[in-house]
Amino acid sequence: MSDLFNPSEEHLALRKMVADFTAKEVEPQAEHHDRTGTLNRELFGRLGELGLLGITIPVEHGGGGMDAAAAVIVHHELSKSDPGFCLAYLAHSMLFVNNFFHVSNDEQRERYLAKVVSGEWVGGMGMTEPGHGTDVLGMTTTAVRSEKGWVLNGTKTYITNGPDAQVFLVYAKTHGRISTFLVDRTCPGFTTSKPIKKMGMRASTMSELIFEDCQVPAANMVGEEGGGLVHMMRNLEIERLTLAAMSVGIADRCLDIMVRYGRDRVAFKQPINRFGQIQRYIAEGYAMTEAARCLVYNVARSVGPEHHNRLGSDAAKLFAAPVGKTVADYAMQVLGGAGYCDEYKVERFYRDAKLLEIGGGTLESHQKNITKDLTRKLD
Image 1: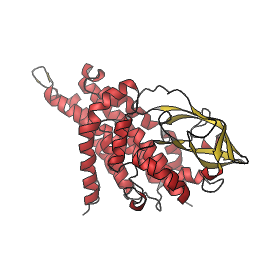
Image 2 (image 1 turned 30 degrees about the horizontal axis):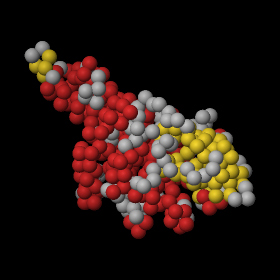
Image 3 (image 1 turned 90 degrees about the vertical axis):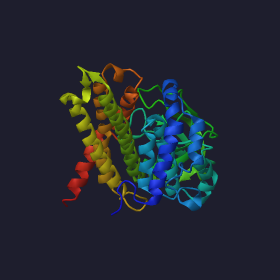
Image 4 (image 1 turned 90 degrees about the horizontal axis):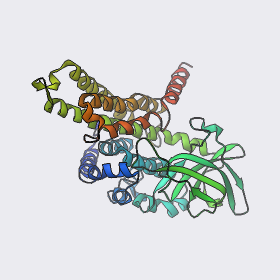
């Protein structure tokens, strides 16, 4: 019988490699970059050296040639130490690299792929706008033809990697339909705002993308005009799956912290894990973490470039996203004042976890999609 969590020897080796890298290199720097609200660019480059930035890209194109389960493993393991850094990785490897590869042409790949897979360049994706989030069809950023290509006008907001990225996949309306464009920092009329301060996930940066008569070459339209909505929706499945995996990583770490604390902390002359209230937090935290883990990895088996499972990926994120926050909350309650302070890191994981209920689709959007898809099955 195959291992659900490590489907092959290659997956198992990947997990061991990422877990070791996380313990030795990610863990020691996490607190500093959370406090400063900065992306560790040097460490991000190490992800390129390890072959993780193009993990879902075919080997012949410089990638890792692996699948959604591999992407889940990387996000799961990184998030045990630094969910903020992992979010920067997700925005680059899933929202840009994975999406870009599957919708771009050979000439575009020649210009950009090696730079983003190696980590020389950081990538990002521009979809959300100040007035339009879940309602993506209402976006107001426009692209109009010019003699040299396209002119973009509008603003994107809450863009992960905005201050650090050199290139973005940007969605804009052309004749009322959504199209996809490659916009890099050499494009005249393109700027980013100052970093947006956040509650959590601070080790990844965020800003607005601002297009003021931004000049984009004709060769930077990705795919056919009006094809952006399909590009966007196809990539949402692996995005939501990897966000769900991040929540499992947070839950794993917080569970470990409270189990150890429950064993070591003494009150009334006995370890506090002898008390029923503490046992409830530990036991329920474990049960929901295991349930989320099984759902996420099971759905990962049915997601890929040629295999779509929106129902599964929405269900995985809907269920798993609150688990990280809930288990972090349980851990904070078990630790009491120690959990509320930063010594045990629980407060950072609690702050980081909330984003997963919002980013990549709100919980409410998943509820809507699941209901719609289940109803469609009746027809």
